[in-house]
Length: 418
Image (cartoon, rainbow, N blue to C red):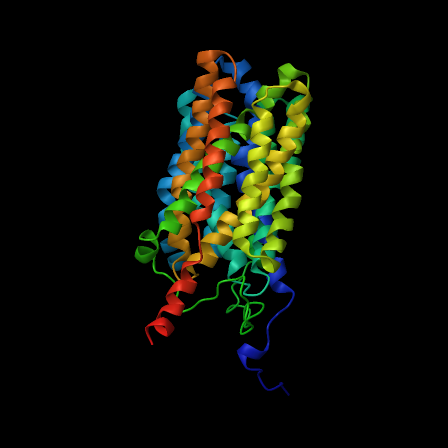
């Protein structure tokens, strides 16, 4: 004898949404971690093996992020057609193959071809997929969930470089690539087993039907993609994303090479940046659920600016403090950029809106990594490059005051007209 089915809207699952948020976190640990943070652990070995300049090496990252950026606007259409789970599995499978092939490269052509593929992987199994995977399971606590999800990129910067450096020491850099390629295979199997939508689990998002001022819910008042493009908020948020991505990815990509001459252990250099970022992503995501998200957003950018100011003193004793503060500010800003996009414009066209912002910030991030290397080759130090980073973060902080919640204005309009 079977129980009478409970109406869908009255039986939310309180556990599975958090499982999906953790899966989104692990996805970013694997994909972002192995393409933008963990990969830097191989830099010294590649420079020594092939004799490339830093500009030549870092052009790979520009290529990855430009490809990811140009493909990002199609993420929404891909999700609609294939679903998050299928995209994740396909992306992770291809990623494992590319990482294995990385250990076989013989010249820059091979290097750039693999990083071209990495760009496509970041669209199929990167930040947009992770944010949407987490967001579709939450109305209430969405800020906390997105904060938990994007913690994954920080975890990648903490866990992967020490692991990879140890593997290189024990097995050589080529074999290390092959060993690390096992990681996306394992997560692909985990995705097949666990990832589902609320409808597939016969449930509703956590907080469905509960008013929540700090989180967007699917609504007829959501801005459609073309409407969002016409708002000042969209372009201000896009500039903030571009300026901060340019700056922080430049720091991430060059930090190990920067600190080696200063006598710091490169194995733990990225930990100085990502451990504070890990805590701040979750902390400020939580704060955005209980405080006005716009003020949390601006506060993160101001903290990041303080760190950049300390960095451009080029004082060896202040470098560690600067990196920690940058990481703490960036972690929250990274979370709030994603959350602002969803809360300010809604979920209806979130894939396209986030995809377009990602296109611009990915290209900017790639330029930051590459141009910082080019400027080092030209001047023999990072002074000019880091002054540019500080200026961009200051501009991003100012532009954050032009980002506002557009949904509220539209939903209020009929009342005003009446």
